[in-house]
Image 1 (cartoon, rainbow, N blue to C red):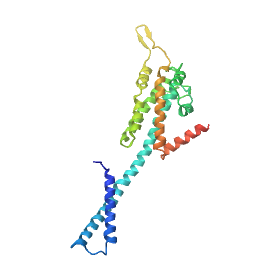
Image 2 (image 1 turned 45 degrees about the horizontal axis):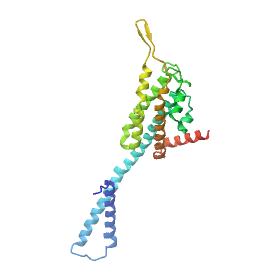
Image 3 (image 1 turned 135 degrees about the vertical axis):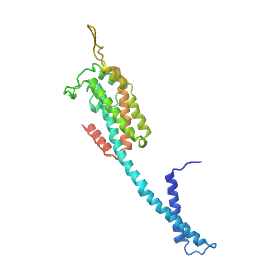
Length: 255
């Protein structure tokens, strides 16, 4: 047997109640009783129907309307958090290549693993960022620290967004979960923490290699970015956040 949503059942009962009231009070009002007590029975049905209509209006005002307002508020806030997820993914991509790939290309073009491999060659974790970004000590941030900071920001934003998981599409939850499960995350943070170590009179310096080994994961990140962006633009198109995102993309295409 097919299961009907409770809201559909309640609405059907409302229609039945309205039809009952109209039929008894207007359509069959002057028709003689078909059986003894028929008029009283009709009055009883009308009273029950009026009570149900009143209860349904009360239900709309106290349950449906507040839930709709809450859902719209949550949708706007969720869109803001989704946009922040995109922001952190974009900065992971940009900082990993030390700005070798312009932000416009990251946003508008589908880049391959090889594109990222070329862009990350000769980029090292201890390089200073090409564009100044201050550390708490006032120094320019290093590539390794910048990406680690973006990964942490991404995880914190996802934790906040998942508080609203009952109101978020399963596909979006899956995509965002993939972004924080990306194998690059822990590997990058652990590798960035490796420092020189002195054992006795011997100084052990970790091997200095570029970050091109992360090209595959950066390509995955950009693919996730594309899919999350599509959901933001399609399903949250009426939010202020999505409208600003649209405008930003339009300006980039014109520039």
